[in-house]
Image (tube, rainbow, N blue to C red; front, side, top):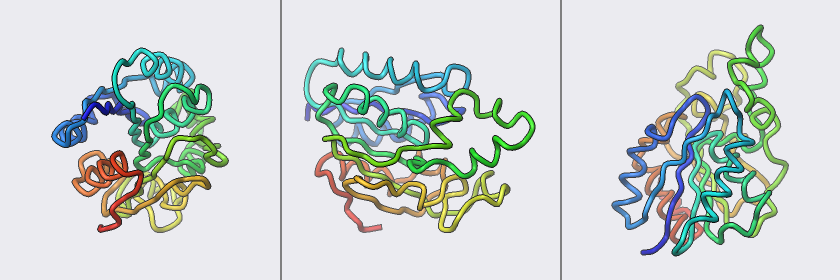
Length: 208
């Protein structure tokens, strides 16, 4: 298989947090890159530009994007800005595609906007709908364990940080819910299997 996957981490994270998912994708026959960007201090703008440049420089087969949380929004922003960079597919893992209630709540506290940093706008507003040519699938978690639950801003079901409803975007090709927390999506065998299924077929297996 010549297909290549670029993995994008979420807020406050770095590329190495995606190592377990990378291993599973490589075992399934994909070549994989971990894409690092400064999610708080520099925000997604520079990350989007760097992702576009990185994708354009890839030689070979299709390039797919798999983004956890904020990383899914960064991937979609890159494709909205430069839709020609890839014919590959996109999987969003626990991404608040409709905007994050937790981010909006945190931003109301003194200093809260500094905690989220320059990713505040994209996390609070999300995306209105997906109208691109690339197939986009979203995987949501439903184990309600995480710091976001403490803010009381999440509608059930949720993964402790992002509600399932926040991952449901008009224009998605497919959507599936797995038994995982928000961070647990990075290590979940179910999430990895669903990601592989979508990258191969543009559909989730739905057997969860």
